[in-house]
Length: 163
Image (tube, rainbow, N blue to C red):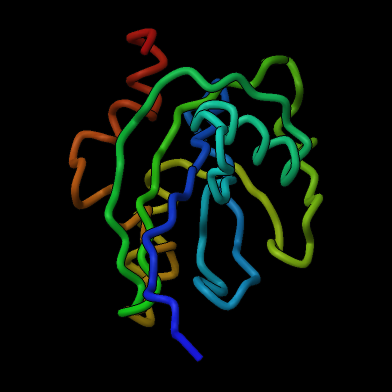
């Protein structure tokens, strides 16, 4: 019996923002990252573009129809000696900007507890939680560490600048 060597997998995270600069975030219900805040996303499929993956995963998980617009960044996420991901973060806009944020659906309740709209200040507050334990998914922590200006690209300032 041969043991397969661990492989590096590719994940795609869709950063979907609203007119106020808030982003769609959900609480994971799977073994890896259970209880942590995440963006919609998932595994890149063979032959799929990372833009198509971000659009597909957002629709499958939240019911929002989005258009992927821009590559925001990449992270190198080593969860354990056998679990290693490269995560591609993609900025997305809702196709129907008039669709109310309250219309988020939880279409994969076995994988996600709920979806909410959060700003970067909310994310920072979760990271600095009272118990000292980060409740934000590792790729997002790495994104903030590796790309210090990312909040300006996604937040309200970016909306004003038309990014």
